[in-house]
Length: 329
View (spheres, rainbow, N blue to C red):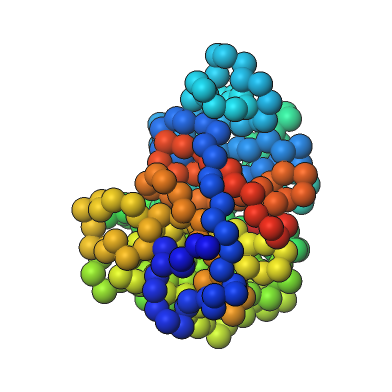
């Protein structure tokens, strides 16, 4: 039986004993440098970033026998191929199998959202500016059932005059229109974002590492026109490390990469251990899947039955089996 103390311990967030499930062991399948942004294509290949956003690479992992020349696979299953010589903050496939990325471009100076045909390599920029100003640091993205893209953007310590310079959430419509749907001060430091399978709720992670900052998940009603309303605090990670990225299963449960195994010199406490927090639509912690490496950054579903979780943490890509099928969001 797994004791559920890994993802914040507020009584209102705890699951009852009969909701606890046996621990699942996360299997390392690739070991590289800082890993981020996993997403899985229709054939089961896992796309992810190593080395951060700038000066990184975008890789593809496939199951099977190692090829012997790829990066990061000594003694581990599968094989890795380099897709391109620069990375991204987050990745997701759309309904047509095109790869969407929150990124900064090949030279680190073109922040925005792109759409790539992975077969031809053709890249289309979906969003580069808002009201004439460049985005700052696109962090995470998700999609809804109408093909609209939602992404988080947050400034660095000293944004330039030609950047938006504000913590915000944007929506990109199929016709290319970019709409700002949330901004500071109503949000503080937006990170992971996902939409429920029925397109009715938008979830947003706040990951402010300073004392008193929001470390929680906000939930909003998502209207048919893509606007949000009725904010409520869905889950609170404070005073420990908040969530980073997240995904959602077919039953509406969130799978959130959160917590720390070791201090990192921030104001975050060690209350939340590193792992995947499985949180019900009612905001209750159902399960905690420990991940033995910092920093756990993001998570995605894949596999023929969509019951395999792929997790990026530290230098490693992990996988673990779960009971409920996931979505591609």
